[in-house]
Image 1 (cartoon, rainbow, N blue to C red):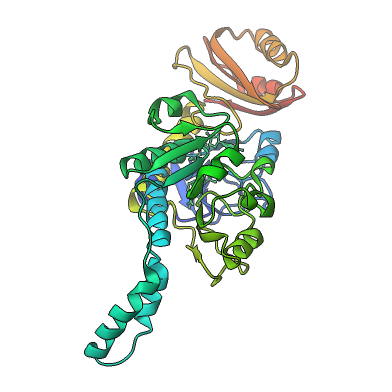
Image 2 (cartoon, helix red, strand yellow; image 1 turned 135 degrees about the vertical axis):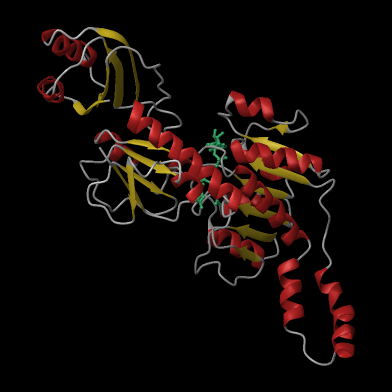
Length: 388
Ligand code: NAD
Ligand code: MLT
């Protein structure tokens, strides 16, 4: 059977080539896809087809995907944690340097010069004092969110001679291990803001992370601080930051999310969502999600999902059943009863859940037939049944 993959954004061939043409068709238009691959395409207004098994976000942020609706329909959503983190780290370092050396304004100045070279050289020497900047060593960087990206930035900034303070109340153990012991943890964002010359955000966009920088919090910041936002628009209140730069309180705002409110504003450097746009990051993200989607379609294995925990089971027995269902009482009991009625013996199984969504993956010691699959599908609360 051919699996149909719908692509909603450009996805690197390095990943797509991992889905063999004999078993997968990959198109930009498909009414009944088995899986969808995308980057930043906003799926919120899209109808979710009944055929859909999985969505692969070739990147980190999943705020462009209606995760709850996907869970309600038994669709697994995967992302690519860490696969673009070096690309974002490098752009944040570039952003700090663009800001503290006034590089954008300096380039604009040079682009506007006119006259013979001798005249131009005079203007260069006369004009450069306007763009004198400051250096990174000894300055303090505050990193909000110490996940895949934040930890890399914190460590890189230490290597550049900066002091680094970090805030993440739910840091994962694997990232805590990677974090330089010279990074100073703080207990609140306000504490971080009061100490930092540069503040950079690496948190997902959630209700709890909206407007983390706002008119009130800016009052507690150091004068001349630089705010960097390569996470998502909405995390920094644009009007408040633009006003604070106008008033001379903040030095600049460097971000990846242009809007009419900030485009061309004094002290703002807005880039066209370039954080993950490197060959390496695009290949890493596409490869990671393609491998995950293929393993889910072919083996029912779940790795790096945002609406289910990791679920693995080594293949054994005669056939495999992958059952997506509601996280309600007695679901496994009802599934076992139906299997008992058709004399199927469970070799081994795993069941796990996240919120309202649950998943049971099992290998049976005998084959089952379509009518048994239909009986499983008829159980109230069962969302999808696949015989693999
Ligand atoms: P991650 O999941 O590895 O890390 C996010 C961290 O934020 C987690 O450790 C979490 O505990 C922490 N966090 C959540 N809420 C917090 C809060 N209120 N205060 C402090 N910490 C909080 O994700 P990541 O790969 O580091 O990416 C972070 C975000 O960056 C993504 O969600 C995405 O929106 C954005 N991103 C943007 C680009 C780009 O192209 N500009 C590229 C990749 C990621
Ligand atoms: C992400 O969250 O990973 C980014 O938005 C990257 C992208 O451009 O796809």
